Image (cartoon, rainbow, N blue to C red):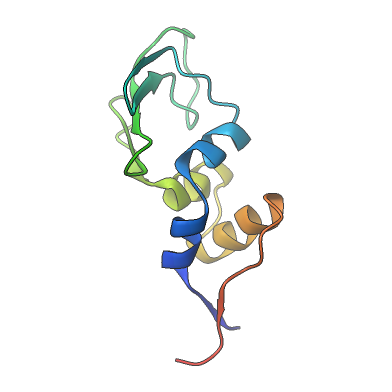
Length: 104
């Protein structure tokens, strides 16, 4: 199986696109910093701000479940797929070409 250029996936797919696919609705915003309920675990309140994401640099952190990373890692965690499969799934869901690496 050929490899995937994960850097290209991260450059071409934004954190906002991943959050939209996950149905994330921020309960607050401060510039490029968004807050809300974590899309990875059950939250008891829609107004909770346990989840923080910086959409400019594409990084997230949940203060409750301690999950953190970039948009591809968020998609992998949400779908419970290994990173390679998550990248393929994410590209397909967004109608993007998969950036295969054919030669190492």
